[in-house]
Length: 335
Image (tube, rainbow, N blue to C red; front, side, top):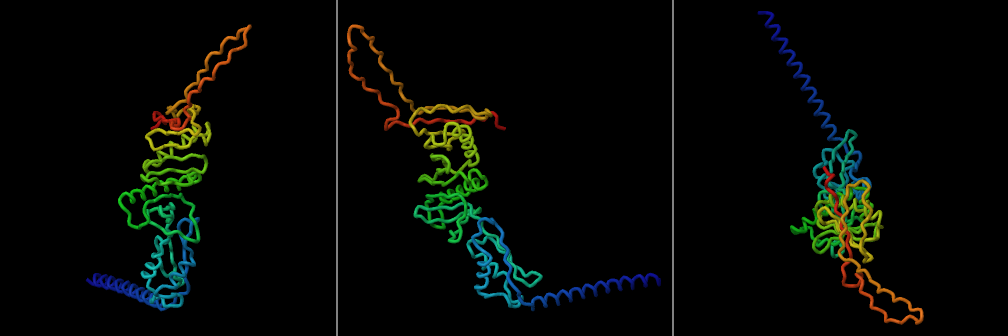
């Protein structure tokens, strides 16, 4: 009986001891928090994240934005007077800021973690105005400080922030097309400009080669660029980069090239890896000019003069369609 009473008192004593320790810890924590709240902000630290090659807003801009806000400069003010939520809302109003996380660090400094919106494409409208599109399809105003190295699209049909259904689809296709170009170093270097046609399709102006690439709608982007790369490697690298005026990759499983010189398009050499079959279709051919047989020379008479025969018209005359070479990739070896 006595041993049970001692055991009960021991348990009560341990419980009281833990309760006292916990109460002391809470009191110390509350005192520390109160002391910190009574402390003053010693400075502002800004940390930027995003594409470090295209910073359109600087640490100085963020500090100036906070210092000129409704709460004025927080440096020197008590920490308890700082409205963190209001400061985050103020910073994210900047069109180039994607998100902002603000807190007070252990050194009583106001720390601002800012993530910048990364531009994906620069778009010019019919009226000449321009803006950037980010990776989420949002518009970003053009900066006077810096120009981003991104694909350029011209001929967008709308200046307004509110788009029609067709223009919204076009904007999404621009994002898909620009995103693919940005991820590939070759196409980023090769694509000079992307023109939006009146029927809301795309034509690419390359940096290398005097031709226009008819891309069609902004669908099957990877597949179309793969076809074009095969055509570059197995076609233009052998017949010349300026042989064609237009290269159409909008068709399914084929590339259509229109000759510049109006001559019949000879088939290029076969691919080395045999992964591409080349099927050449001549949209028009040059008629073969047949020369009349020469009269036999009479030994006793001088050769008689004959009237010149009119030459037949060539296929390169005006009004005739230029020859086209059609290349169809072989799908037999594809998985």
